[in-house]
Image 1 (cartoon, rainbow, N blue to C red):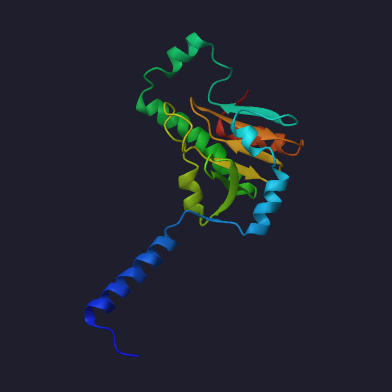
Image 2: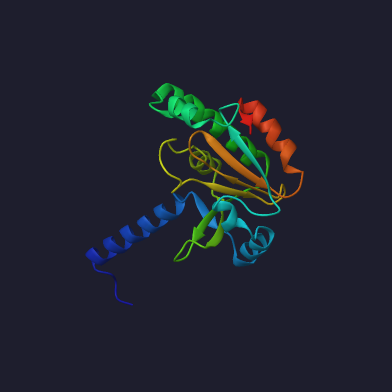
Length: 191
């Protein structure tokens, strides 16, 4: 085989470095197809849950507020939240999400396909990646880009919400005490 010309060699080295860098900086990786299928079978109602609920699932909401806000309360509480208050509320929700994720096996759920109908399950590549992904987005933007976690052992799905409220759906009763403890530890309320 002929030796590579200096320009070709440098370009190949750069391409390999970029490829290695992109792999090492990934925050999560897809699970093998066999595990994907097992999780899809365990959570067949994921799409319905993402749209607001499904039959046979219990719902809990975790919030910085101690009750559901009326429309007038929502306007006064959420209109013009200062940065310090927003940071404090987001920190509580992040601590709650990270507490659950650190104590129980969880997978990040992403919906793929033309109409985002097909759930795929990914595992975080590091604790730092998990920490970064479980930081809530600003309260006043929509649901696009918010995280969703599946907890197979707890039979529970966690959706990041907006307006400082996150939503959990569970089938069995094993997840509820875990959620209650984590919420109390983070200074949050169950609704």
